[in-house]
Amino acid sequence: MEETYIFKVVIGGQGAVGKTTLLHRYLNGTFLQNSAMTIGVAFHTKQINLDSLQKKVKIALWDLGGQERFRFLQANYSAGAKAAVVFFDMTRIGTIMQVKDWVKMFRSHATEDVPIVLGGTKLDLVTPDELEDINHLARETASELDLDCYVPTSSKNGENVDAIFQYITDTLIVQSQDARATAPEATQSVPSS
Ligand SMILES: Nc1nc2c(ncn2[C@@H]2O[C@H](COP(=O)(O)OP(=O)(O)OP(=O)(O)O)[C@@H](O)[C@H]2O)c(=O)[nH]1
Ligand SMILES: [Mg+2]
Image (cartoon, rainbow, N blue to C red):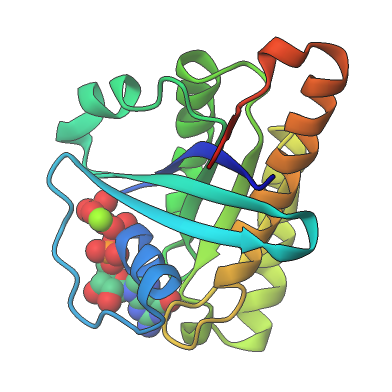
């Protein structure tokens, strides 16, 4: 019988770093040239069929508006998340300074051990020289904050966009299977007809 897994994934990061544009690329496969600021929060779902495992994964993606004024919503909407991605803008390196606050918020409102990916955006706009320094700082940040991994992305050409969600899906499937092995009633999967 085919099983369906449902996972909530929250997307954070300072305003205008490119969260909505990245989700648009992931969901529609195109670059959104002039994305409007997200007012509050936006919600999307994506279904992935894992034919080889006879499983379906539905990810509920919560795109959190990054502007300071939505801070009160960001925490509320993080509850129950099974994974998170925090983005910074590789062309505005200062945006990496806010990553720590997002991580802290996700760990206190989702779970302490929620898997968190650090994502860099706008890779298409940085030179190879700049990239070296940016990658160095990003890896340092990921290690200091004990994040799962760092992935530089471009929503313009699609580089590494799918890779982020592939990582998350793989991680959550493995976690669910581990959870089922030790406590069958704690699994996140629901049977489908
Ligand atoms: N060249 C380039 N531009 C990008 C990329 N990602 C995002 N942008 C641009 O960056 C701007 C901001 O992107 P958004 O996706 O709206 O940013 P956001 O993080 O959702 O912002 P908030 O909703 O305010 O939190 C838009 O003009 C995008 O076109 C990218 O990978 N490459
Ligand atoms: Mg947005």
